[in-house]
Image (tube, rainbow, N blue to C red):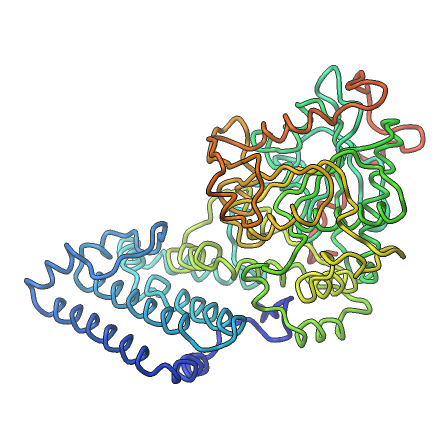
Length: 566
């Protein structure tokens, strides 16, 4: 597997040498000797109690019944019965957890500036996650038991799985043979009605006799493929929107290769505005409703700010899904972004070139290593298992390259300098942009456990955008919180009429409702379906128009291109 360089820094994000970060911990804590001594004394005492219990039969039984430390809720690493019932494995688990708690407390109390402390805490957690006894064959009881039961076949298969993943250059997270775009993913009927070097535009076919007079243009993230919004029919957000009577258009970003490595930030904004123009032309509507997801929402907001600066207004309403516009508190991603790292990327690809999608995917997976890395190391290589067929993880592994100039502009002006939020600080498409002048009615969705767009960061958009706004907080994370079908009745969401300056104050008085946020969004959007000639019109018999004829059937060529083939 190729060494991975983080897209957010010039330094490799591999786990730092133990001596380096332990030295950093001790040096940072040296000015608080009393606190360090107390932590050490408590840790040594707890470890001594564990050891005494292990060698004393009576104490061992008590230690099994009343463990000194337990895994956090949701930690599935120690599910095997031996971790609970076997004195040796119980001791191993508890000793490891005590060590992790000690190191976490040490890092949290380090006398460093805030960003350095966050980096140290992240490094410590990454190291602790990697050193879990569950990640090693000799100290994982489930691995040992299966190896004995299978006469070693599980280990043989695990080695074969490892070799296969080495050839792929990444860890398999899903049964990739179970899915194919256009066969059982991205199935909503439609056609590509426009394309240029950067994107294809899909128009989906109507499924209702009447449709809204205004079309709905969706802008997905360009760091991933659009079909996260059109997975299988039962969890397709696109299909849901079509069934609500919307004429839906979808931007399908190209998986760029070296030939497209010159595209810049402004090219993406121009592509969005072109998609809006095409949708208007085909539907003969003066305005569209627009939706942006993640980075797609950031791009959409910037594009609308360009229109506002020019005195143009092609959009009636805007929906932002898990989108960040103010990057003052970007979460863990911000830990790795600094001037040196961004400057190194600018020197390497800022004038042309590509950022490989595998780099982005590996970095995002590292943010949730215990969910997206180590379980698959154990299952695939130690247990010799095959990953389950899971559409979200198949999509997650289907990475997308980015052109260097666009990527460098994005990271510097958002994560590093946070200039998009400042009126007039940026020149996009030749004009000064101001998000406050984007005064369209706006629906903002954030998700409570989002590790990519923290919900409090998304809440800040309320203070940046003009116009009437509605904020809804969904349960779960960046993807599962968004892709929550209405028919499933899963999870919940929070909403309130009054918006406080402090997001936590808003949450304290927000009302929780069970089920998906999709119907609430649909109800909100209903008001903006119509135009001056009426709310609805007869559904078109076909997609495209004389000016924009059908090029090919959805899902189109661009979305099928793999990052390694671009």
